[in-house]
Length: 296
Image (cartoon, rainbow, N blue to C red; front, side, top):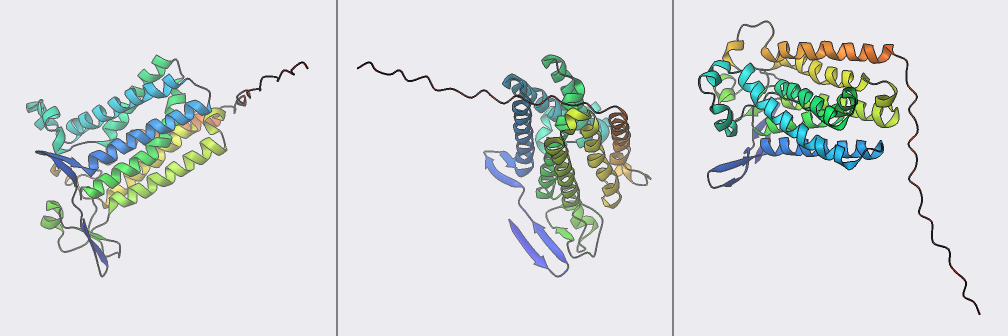
């Protein structure tokens, strides 16, 4: 990695390949996805222990959540951003996986389906799963955006701000923007997602909002994630050529339903009477066996 600071810009020359096994490149982007999934599983393990649920619940969310997120992200990219290519060559949905192509909106849809199946399997209310998943989604989204930064992709328009980046490894930057710096929109999104993560943690751990007003956390998480995406898209470069000339790009159109759903969930949770959650009973303390006195 080479990171050079020049007046009013950052020259970003980061090698996206962590290491190579034969002809297979292991990239930081894939590792960031794996890290995000592992952190999500760890949080669910904590939720289950905190709320007295069996360990098998947290184990099954890892399976349902991982498969649903990865499949949804891949299929979402193929469907939303390069439909005709993948319809004409459907096998490349699998064979082209290593070349990239993961869509966050597809991941969100896949995760919603996976959580519904998970909730049915474990006989939990669907809203229970939705509220709690938004906490790791916040930090997971930030980590994945760092993966985009390592890949030198999904950056913004030209800027003269002192924190602008020159993505010298990006063919798009070299062809369209060099030598101008551009907005590091990956960092902007990551910071907003971290802020959403902090708010949700405070509401869950300090205010017990998930049990007092079900749906509020889910709604705030959706708005914090997709309203951020909607506004930052205004300073991003287009991801695909077909988006040129659009008033709103594909990412913005796909974000609108999630934003509206978030508003509805907050209204729904706030309109209902708050429940008083039962306190979690402390684990019984082990008592030492009485010491028998020896007879003299």
